[in-house]
Amino acid sequence: MRNATNIDVFSSLGPTAEEICRQVERILASEEFHAPKRARNFLEFVVSETLAGRSGFLKAFTIANVVFGREASFDPQNDPVVRIEAGRIRKALERYYLVAGQTDDVIVTVPKGGYVPHFEYLRDAPPPPQNEPENARIAYLAQQAHPLPEVLAPTLPAGRGRGIGLPAIFVLLLLALVSALFIVGGVPVRTPPPAAPVPTVAVEVFAESSSVDSRADIARGLRDDIIGQLAQLDEVIVVSHPSTGDRAAAADYALQGNIQMDGSRLRSVARLVRQTDGVVIWADNFDADFRAQNKLGIQANVARQIAGAIAQPHGAIFQAEPAIIARSALKADQDAEACTPAYDSYLQTMTAQNHSVVRECLRQATQRNPDNATSWALLSLVYLDEVRFRYRLGTPPSAEPLELANASAQRAASLAPDNTRVLRAVMLVNFFRGDIDKALAAGTAAYAANPDDVEVAGEYGLRLAMSGKWQSGCELVSIAIDKNAGPRGYYAGGMAMCAFMRGDFEAAEQWSRISDLDCNPIRHLALLSILGAAGKMAEAKLEQDWILANAPALMTNIRQEISLRLQRPEDQERVFAGLRAAGIPVELPSGG
Image (cartoon, rainbow, N blue to C red; front, side, top):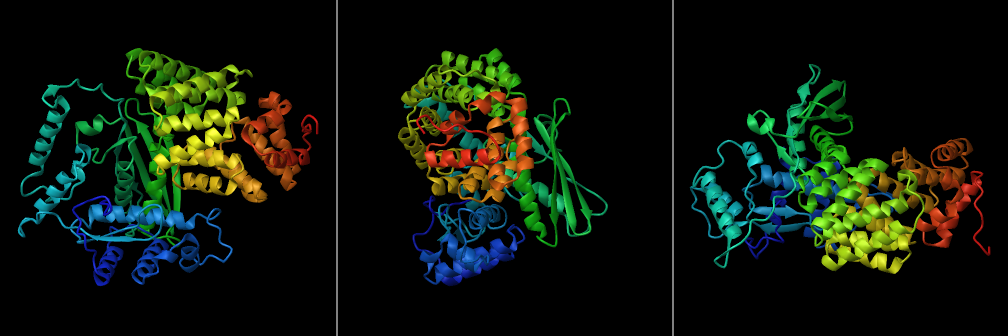
């Protein structure tokens, strides 16, 4: 979206209150403003309060009480409704200005980090001739150095590109870019190595069953919203029109689906197909009810879920066998970055075989290019997994992996001390080494460098929480959950501990059961403590039996494993008390 705070072609004088009100009315009346009713109420409220001079009162508590009817006991840490609706408003405004509001004079935004709206004029300089409005838009795009990607060009409305001609603009920009790449101060420079390939996704129109009524064209609208969601992600390239010949055939994946109706209920069935062999690598159903939400809200919500499920760093596209990815990278002797997709995929599967292959890929990558900080940081995390996930990976107890993880993290930090991925590795390694001050200092630096990185925010939040700073830490973990940070089950486990520590055993159990419990013994141990504290002995016995069958050594090292993760003795004792209530003997600390 055009951000008025970052673009210098806006007028220094802001729009009047009357102009702002007219613009908000125009936005709310537009079919291209995809926001549910309560998000619209949110926008109207924050605008009216700001115009009335009360922007200082636009806090989560105030909005939750006035707009959403929450009680005085509302706690933004446990109820993220305001953050969620603010995110919806930002995305809906972004879509509106990209689709319907391109020529609007007044720009309305809700900047991240707060809930106070911002208003600005959009005025190009120099002003375009009155009979050539399209030239202004093309000039603006060129001036901002954001040319439309070729793969999205077919989605432009008919009639765009008249005037000076969009192809000519692209040719000029391309020539300027080539000149900049090859000549710096008159001296030719070496062409950089090619980056690792980015997966491409062709989004097909969802089929409609004969029972879908005129409330639709929901299938086509859903497709448009999915394209909009995917286009915002750096991890994939979206091909909007799979019918355009070779471009669709060259796509790595095709997203297909259909829409079914049963009375007021709607079901969206989606599947992701690998084009090379036709294998369905992901499929899921998404249900909605027209009595609870309007068509546009349903489209936006389902599209967001589908895009997150397939294209986030831990989504279905990146769940291909990491061993295949890693071996391909090694065989081609590519740049060190080629191991990164294998690492992202390994995080989702986390098997002993995939761990070994990814570790070898990164080890060879650091040998080929010893100055690549990212490879050293990822290698550090892979070594660390042999400590924190040793029961899942089957690695023997040893001090060596932690020493290797620390050495790799230090090497990464010496090469790129301000890199967020490096800082994340430094944070985690020092946390498990017991140097909490150094760990949190690195986490603070990483979060300050890029607060929009949900992976950094979530991991930093977990370290804060496990260090005893539960309120601030759990707030960040909650944000990571809201923004579909992955793997989702990892952060859901963190939310389970947040609920457990405040004594909400029901919420703790719910979060724990939706987290990744299938293969992670530590997660089963946490749920065992939660169930013991809640007095659910039968369910606790099932968790105990699973651990004894799949990770019996964990039962003899409970105090060591919990102490490795929770830094405060009082937090450790809460977990031990739950385990004892479930009938698990936990020895007292030495000297106790």
